[in-house]
Image (cartoon, rainbow, N blue to C red):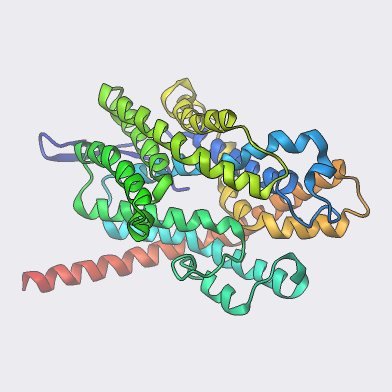
Length: 378
């Protein structure tokens, strides 16, 4: 994640000046904990062929049931994204935002798609049935748009993030102001819900459907963090939290019932959705925002590569060793190996390729934009 800065905008005077803010180390910690939660859910609670062909409940007993609720970790990611992406986009131009997001998402993703495809096509074909063509389409990250299956199921969140980035880029092109943001956060999630209920599938897809209130809530938390407490942002935040509970809880009930051996509690899921917002509020609006633990930055950097690579490679590792090691040993060992692979992917590739790609893209996009403006003037 690039260094977190905020932009102060004085719309009344028509002036824009940038004021550096201290890094929110707690955000890095939350991102890492969310990735650990996803990993733990996949290894302990989600049904798979990994643990010697036994369902996880037979392997972990009572540990598996509470672990199902960390399936809400992607929802926490979306709230964090609403906060952080707005923070990094406010006061920037379109080339900067596009270059930043593309360079952030694609390098590690390409490595993960290739590595997981090699695993599932040749090393462990029984892990999941995929094709070479499917893997090739997955390299675009737009496979859901073409109705092509994900090589790794965790990629579904990236398609959601991409659509949010598109909305942010459109917003940057129009011009981000506090007043516009408040209107967007008030109307956008409601419009997404209405489009979903009316069966307007393409409109709902563009508006992010039931995930819109998560992103909008994160954006509102950033407004409060940036400009201070005020009644309207808090009221809109409360409305988005309620809307998120309304949309996410039924969806998670269906998903967890289908993919685990348990019937989840809607009350606990509702509390979990509220907690996603509360955690981001805690690290940005309370004294935790002054947390000075630089080592959290290193953990936060591992979040994305860990998320991309842990699932099928972890299941394969578990299946190879589960006949020989007890779960109490194999589970932490698998987590350690997944973290090691994430460390290698970040420090050996993403850390070097991402910044170069961002600079190259920004230069190309800036030249293209300048050329268009010159033609328009001529």
